[in-house]
Image (cartoon, rainbow, N blue to C red; front, side, top):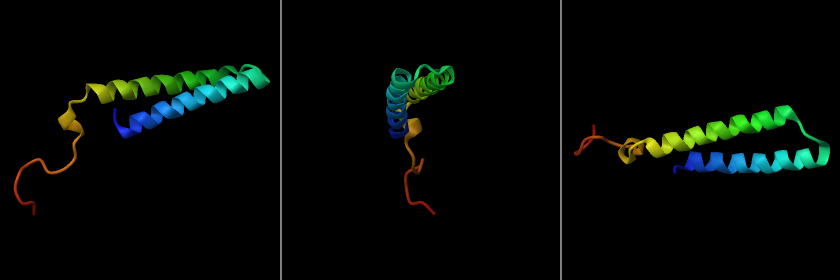
Length: 69
């Protein structure tokens, strides 16, 4: 899992904790839960795309050996 995907997972879990705390303290908000669900789906999509990409596709740098101009 790449760095941005890990960060997105942390943000999603933190948003879940905050949304739950808000719901307990002030009552449920449909839009807040809807936003969290959208964030969760995006996170799952990022994780799926990250895990399906071949390892070589994520590597940056020269593609051919030898000195570069």
